[in-house]
Structures are given as structure tokens and as C-alpha cells.
Image (cartoon, protein in one colour):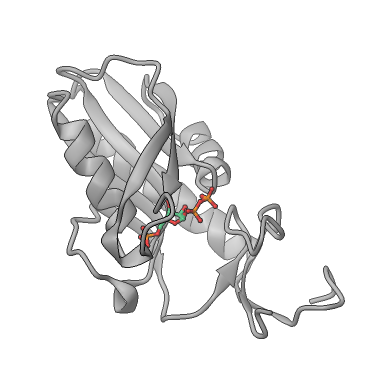
Length: 180
Ligand code: PRP
């Protein structure tokens, strides 16, 4: 792929594969939540924004789109899973169905924290929809109710995922062969 001269990117998921799978996920979610009451989609900033836009456009349901910002680790060891909310929800989620949208579940530490935090606000349901699942890297076992693709342990970029803030805007998902 020619996007950047100094990294070798190997395409793992094409634009068409991604778009077809996101459409399937949206159909599944539409079926599952039809008539189920108010739905709040919570996109976790920042990587999930691309996925959240594509998925939400295809839902045939009323929903509120909201965002939560987190800062990973706050200087602590990554394995501790200490995350801090940097931007909270605008919505009150009490007695609402909440669907958390993530670009990737890697160790699971981020979602583990978010799930514990959001549960204290008494939503009527709380589920997770992740574009990518990387089960080989999991440290905390968290439920991923919907996922787009499962990938092996690789450094991946594109469709929201970055390498030092680059490559988020790729319409494909690619493995970065030589992170440096
Ligand atoms: C990434 C991703 C998830 C988290 C997953 O966010 O968007 O939020 O890491 O990793 P985990 O399962 O190991 O906790 P990142 O901190 O890179 O922020 P970004 O979305 O702003 O790039």
C-alpha cells in the first residue's frame, strides 16, 4: 500500500469487506433492539468514531448518539487498566438501553473499566459492539456482544485505529509490519 513511504502496510480487511460486515451488524442490532425502548449509542473516543458513523447510519431505529472520552493508564502501568474519563456522556442513561461502540477490544481493560462505570448509572441494559476483537491479547474477560471481525495479535491501523495518530482515516484495516 502506498499511503506512507516509511511504513509497510499489509491490507487485512478491504473497504468492501468492512462495509458489508458493518451493514450486517447494523441489521442484527436493528432486529435485536426493535421495540426495546430508548437506545443510547456510546462511542468511545476517539478511534470508534469512524465505526460509529458507518454503523449508526445503517440502523433502522431511533437512538441517541453520545460520546465518552477516556485517557488510558494515566501514567500507570498499562496492565493495571487504570483509565480516566476525560469527557463524560451528555445523556442520562438511567433505564435506557446502552450499546458501547469500540473500534477494538484488545486487553479488555478499557471496556472493563467503562462497563463497571456505566453500570453504576443503572441503564436497563448494557452491551458491547466492537468493530475488531483481538482475543489473543485479552487480560480481562469481558463480554463482547457484537463484533465485526476477529484478528490475531497484530499491530493494526485504519478505520479509526492509529499509529501515533496516523492512519485513522484509512478505509481499510492494515497490519503495520514495521512499527518504529
Ligand atoms: C484503543 C481503543 C480502545 C482501547 C482498547 O484506544 O480505541 O479504546 O485502546 O484497548 P484495551 O482493550 O487494551 O483496553 P486508545 O487508547 O488507543 O485511544 P484512541 O481510540 O483515542 O486511539
